[in-house]
Length: 183
Image (tube, rainbow, N blue to C red; front, side, top):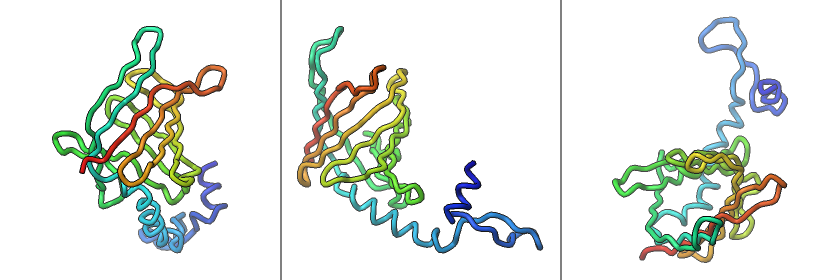
């Protein structure tokens, strides 16, 4: 059970209530909580390079009903929410939280909340210049298990490959996005 797990890991401890005299309540362990902002900030630095404006090419393979094609565009990313998130920036300037690090679980979180919906996670985090996110996603109305592999190629190029899990458990290529920084 969640509460038992939080106490057994030392994340929560029993302490006197601030609001009810003589009552013990569960609180987040103060020493642990005091270290979280620095841990979060240090990890988020690993994605700071993403801040800026990027041209992209989305390479989509031939399918049963489509020809292969390359879609192009511009994406912009910023630090937002008091530097707690990497956000995607819409053409009108509106920021949407997109990527963060959860210091409690020690994993990266990738969120989509507009048109496509999902929370992908990376428990392994960065390995060299590569990070892999996976999880359940609703992509334009279609539910799928999704894997997204990011590769950073220097300070001005990166890309990610999207894959969906097939019924037999294997991963199938969906598309490949390649980004180049606008200078």
